Amino acid sequence: DQQVKQNSPSLSVQEGRISILNCDYTNSMFDYFLWYKKYPAEGPTFLISISSIKDKNEDGRFTVFLNKSAKHLSLHIVPSQPGDSAVYFCAASATGGTSYGKLTFGQGTILTVHP
Amino acid sequence: GAVVSQHPSRVICKSGTSVKIECRSLDFQATTMFWYRQFPKQSLMLMATSNEGSKATYEQGVEKDKFLINHASLTLSTLTVTSAHPEDSSFYICSALLGGEGETQYFGPGTRLLVL
Image (cartoon, rainbow over all chains, first blue to last red; front, side, top):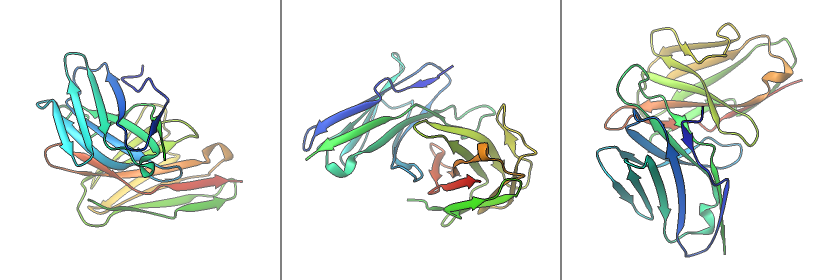
């Protein structure tokens, strides 16, 4: 049962353009969402997060949008740079209850930014 | 941002031996740490939740007697793979939970384990 899904295994974008990575979730108890960037043989690096009380959070070139009714979130990177090429994981957590801090990860999307 | 270290970064061992991996939060205290495993071209699989001063909580299907977790201080958790077998070869990653508005997990760089 995949509660967090990233349906696009890969995305290719030209340098300077916008990268849009998508993520869907099914568990309505999720109320905190995060995006991580990961290179091979390294741990994930935290990029940006959003609480369910917001619909948008921005940090530099990264913006995360949350559509609770659709159970969908997206990460926008603009402008995209070749150094952004990596695997991007969407993650979700239910901050209340017994699963404190536990994250459920999507399958990841490989982003390639071409010069 | 918060920094988490892991040691060793890579380890090769013989089948039947035990291997200990350390996870440290360097600039913050973490009452909760997590241990993950990642298989090639797959997502991270949560193995267990490590709580300082109490027993770890293991995910379904993870053998607690094989993967021993100790969280003796607010900055250190250890994972010991006991009697390692080749199928235990994997990439092990820890994370530490930084509390606050969103309880963000910060990850270590990972440990590559190869069991011969």
